[in-house]
Image 1: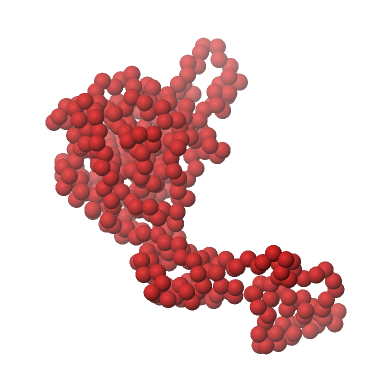
Image 2 (image 1 turned 60 degrees about the horizontal axis):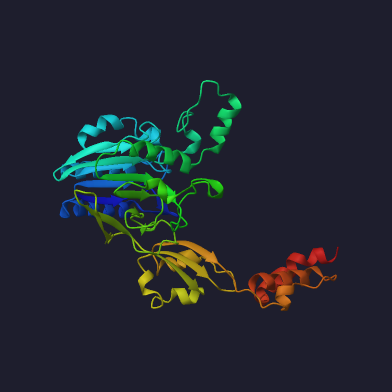
Length: 389
């Protein structure tokens, strides 16, 4: 059988003030064509279907249209909710969809469930493990409450839950029901995975980490949450990564994973590069450097962050740079750091000075150069009355 593994679509996301709707639509067009061209049996989407709990209507429409196109092509679709999705909004009719060939799971309603798919080359067991918020776990999950358990013990069990403990319970429960080759689908931060700036923390202080052994026993585990394509601990536990760049830390190539699985559960994985969407680039230099179109030709069509190193304040920097980089999203002005021990680094000596001298010193410290004659005249006028007090 052939499986196409993807995740973290984040439909409805923007990049700063720039809409990504066209890029996301281009991706799903390419993705549906790829599924058909590769004669894929099953598409797996491992969470974060949308970028926020209340997704924009056009994002919901795009996802629905994509699923319908895949099903019309004869491709089964399995999807789970991630930490960006609101499970109670996305999956209220999940059970009714199963007969259509679209399996959707979220929240705790089907924890430990195993769905058997009967394909041309034999059965495969599918274990769908959406993001399981430990704070929302039912009290009985993974524990025997006991007939005489008191309130303090119950509260302690609630406090001790982590993403790892609730997910470990779910996978352990599922493993008792797996009878064939199997595919686990989960949305989690597995220990050892390489992160990007755009992923939301699952918990504070590392409590969201999930050990790799939680997924022992599955023929292949399709992960979502981390945006960099990568295997974790071996080729059969893998993040597909996000299909588009969602932060300036994501200069890595984007891909989806095509898995060929034998009748006995052996897997061969191939990364297929995503050819659509804009790359991200961080450019550093003075405004004059960056305005030179020959300096960074590969960034003209990219999403750009400009790090300006001018000593002076640059007026209308974003507007000026848009002429060269139409998709500039961020400006970061970082003035050069003065040499240690210089007059500028040590500041004005603590002594009584006139207001105009203090104003001139402040101007020079802020702008990196003394005020020009016109500016100095304005400072003199502005401080004249203060100097007489």
